[in-house]
Amino acid sequence: MGLFSFDGGKKESQPPNTRSQRKLCWESRDAFFQCLDKADILDAMDPKNSKSIKSHCKVENEKFEENCAHSWIKYFKEKRVIDFKREQTIKRIEQEAKQRERNQ
Image 1 (cartoon, rainbow, N blue to C red):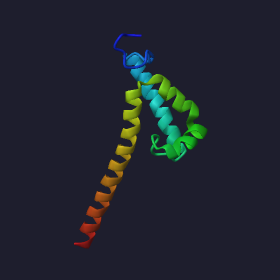
Image 2 (cartoon, helix red, strand yellow):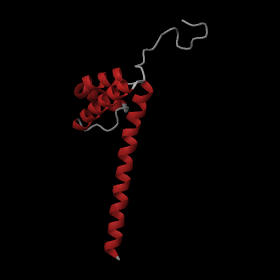
Image 3 (cartoon, rainbow, N blue to C red):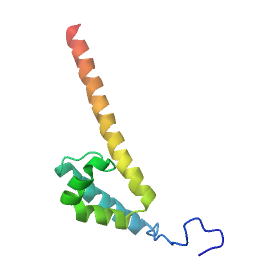
Image 4 (cartoon, rainbow, N blue to C red):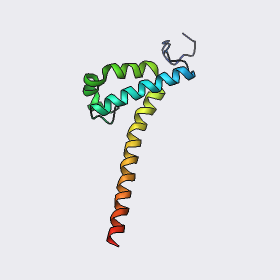
């Protein structure tokens, strides 16, 4: 415990940032997100989904949290939702453009 420690003396264990560790993190993330897809869950950070995640993707979630830094976990979960919304917006715009072309 450091004199000016802000973590209450707790040493949080973070995986080392090596190429092999990043690869393991990405593989764990992909497995977790595949499980979420199968369970039809988009937002893993939404508290409403926590029970469903625990029942469908408990092992994958534990591996993901074990193999990735907490800041990466938050980033990946947020990015998943943002990417989905972005794809939906692009599809909508493309459909609207096709519709306008047909109407001309």
